[in-house]
Length: 279
Image 1 (spheres, rainbow, N blue to C red):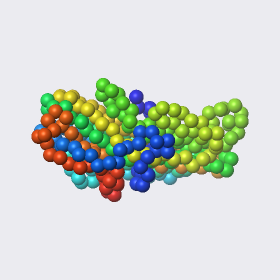
Image 2: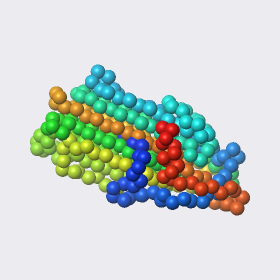
Image 3: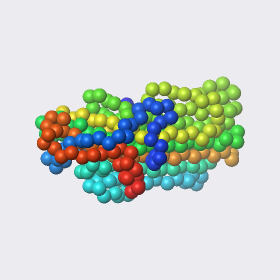
Image 4: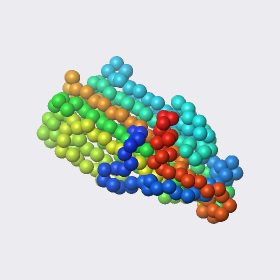
């Protein structure tokens, strides 16, 4: 299930894999027979800001939302727009920094609903280009900066295709006082890691792809969340976090009658880099 914490995702434009090698995307060209969106497939997308709690007096922040529909890119939130082309998708870029004592948070949501109106079985391939960063004061003062990102497909498989949270916590005195969790840490789909450091500049970047299989008449929701947050506990301490992500439709394949559909060549890395130029 979607974890409603802090979430930061960031647009990656040069690195094509995560450091541990898990879930690395296949970057090779793939032949895919395309289906007619107008007759058989509906792809509807929404992106908006949510979960915002900003102290404007002591925080600096920026937030941009993007959507590409029919090959045309727009800036700003959108609700239930139709994605009709390969390469259509959603994206965001947010940043937050400050020295406030109250918790400050900036985040939002993605939702893509796919419906198959035909009797054939369709396979949709999506790409994710994601990166985020968190940093807290590394001068010994107490501060907390955190970022998280997640993409989940809600259907019979209830599959989580991306989850990353990085937390930078400075001021080792909390740890020395017995709070063992007060330290830099990372979290992903399979493990949580305490780093034994304080106030580090932590980052995550990854390029991935995943598939959604739709039998005749079936539908599925793809849910994404992003959030950055931070606070300080000592006067003079600071925090910062940034987040970017692209979620893009790479291909649609008819598994039931591939001979009746047009062939296309889609490359994950090149497609995401092309779309990112508009974002």
